[in-house]
Length: 307
Image 1 (tube, one colour):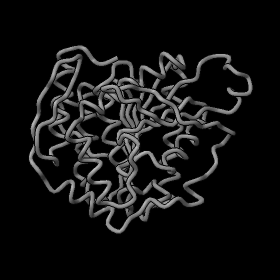
Image 2: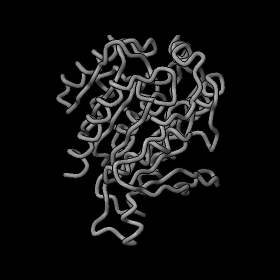
Image 3: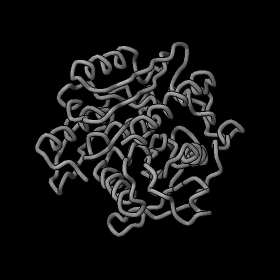
């Protein structure tokens, strides 16, 4: 459910101001139907992200399409309705569930949040791969079925969400509700990459009852007041050569979480840049990506399967 305390309201408003200061204009946020307005001024953060993706295209590769550890099924599914519009995502589960028609007990669930490219084949493959670890996994769509194929298009789609973050918040709220009500998920985690890493962090502030969040090179919140609203374990992965997220920001983020007594495991990989875990992009680093994957699966197994 949406966080209902005054603290939750404040944390969402503050996080939005910090996270989306790279986009000018006003954001109308909805928390329990209460609008919270924040404003931000353009900074160099969006430019830095564009530079990281300069000349990049999300081209599927054999590595990107790697099969999960066990057979899974994947399908397009409507999981939300916002302002009369049906929102379609991609849901994957272990194939044995289809064969048995029901699980002996409901599986924990994971919400996957796409990069700035959108819900493309790479994210669907990662969703299947996570499902192969024993989860019901829903890849949400924050771009209304649009998928970018070049950085300029991705930038414009990302800014559309920045201009109306309340729509994305409602999207994620209904995704969580869908997994709880339709699949009886006993625990729910979130994971996101790039743009989605930022939203995975925000989802931790948005939703009550979220059990774990994973952040892959998403823009960070560096306010102790906002981060104090996180009440679940956190894992994060960043590249030391990522110009869009300075090393000092990662270190400050880790330090603030430690000072607040949060359960956080932050990893900074030397010699790799932004999107190092995306095998369909030019910055892919196989060694760092595999290490992050092993840590991610262990993290979710600890905090979702034992809930």
